[in-house]
Amino acid sequence: MELREFFAEDAIKLDLDGTSKDDVMKELIGLLKLDDKSEAMLFKMLKRRENLGSTGIGRGIAIPHCRSLVVTKLRVAFGRKKAGLDFRAIDDKPVQFFFLIVAPPLEVSNQYLPVLGKIAQFSKEPDVPERLLTITEPVQFMDLLKEKGV
Image (tube, rainbow, N blue to C red; front, side, top):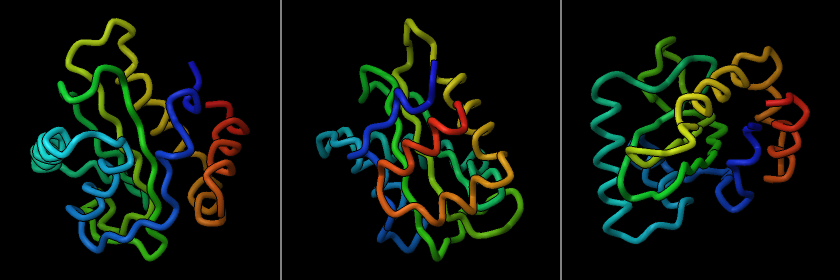
């Protein structure tokens, strides 16, 4: 399993508009192209998950994630906010890079945790935050995933 198999270029946004945690989560959800009711339900689930503890893992990276009936298979999206914003990350630093993961409650392939783990592993690579800042096209994001072999 390779991480890039789960990303689509149209679910990558390199210039997020949101100025708050909620705005950014809504924008990321929008990349999945769900209907309005599903988007609202997913936002509620992600908010609930964030209230348990921030998914901001440090180094400018957050991985908001949840399981939800609004998807039939694992879905991911990536967004970047160069200026960063307060996401209550564990290191108290602003977050610039957002990896959204949504999976159905029951998935036969059980890829939710492995994908979450691979994103965390990818994020820990020393040069990844710096490289994510310099990409200008979604295809470069895909190339970086390929290069890192995740």
